[in-house]
Amino acid sequence: MELNQVMSTRRSIRAYKAGEGVSRETVEEILQAACLAPSWKNSQTARSYVVMEEPMLTRVRESCLPDFNQRNCHNAPVLIVTTFVKGRSGCDKEGNPSNELGDQWGAYDLGLRDAHLILKARDLGLDTLIMGIRDSEKLRELLHIPQEEQVAAVIALGYRDIDPQMPGRRELSETTVFC
Ligand SMILES: Cc1cc2nc3c(=O)[nH]c(=O)nc-3n(C[C@H](O)[C@H](O)[C@H](O)COP(=O)(O)O)c2cc1C
Image (cartoon, rainbow, N blue to C red; front, top):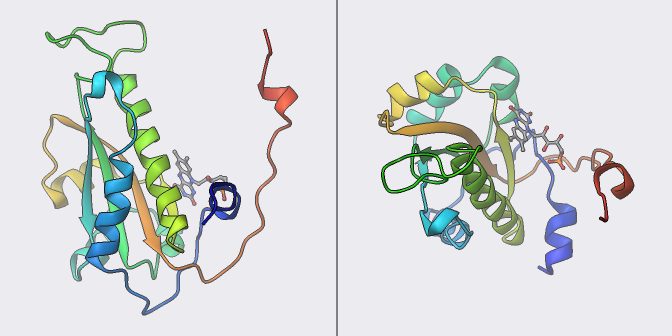
């Protein structure tokens, strides 16, 4: 798909087709594209926990997401929990912050990586929903995510069952200053 078409047709999808699975090969292709994203000193601290088998899918959905997000990803065949290793991106070798943003650069890197992920998914005709409203401690417990990692989003992946309009965007003049 042409890049502009990928970007303009990507939507946050909150209804997925039941019974339409996604193969492990396709998930790996999407994650390979995500790995091409840049990161602080190429530190590559982003991590993914891919859930695509029952009963774990249902357990993650029902115990780690609030009701509205459970509904949003109800039939999604894949949930990808994304984390980043703390104290590396934005930090020197001793783990000291290199500037005032400190460890927040880890979240920045992860966001770039997840942007690649959701756009590659769209390129392959798939759809996604990034969910930042989730229970990080329950995810940590269920998926054995180490304390060294910061849990970020749960990303639903599957085939859209609705075709929502794009929510409005601010004018460039509201968000941009040409200096
Ligand atoms: C970091 C982040 C967290 C989000 N968390 C949620 C969420 O928990 N539940 C949800 O339904 N949408 C969530 N969204 C989706 C946004 O609401 C959505 O991206 C925004 O409304 C713009 O719509 P679009 O993605 O279709 O362009 C999240 C998006 C981002 C980037």
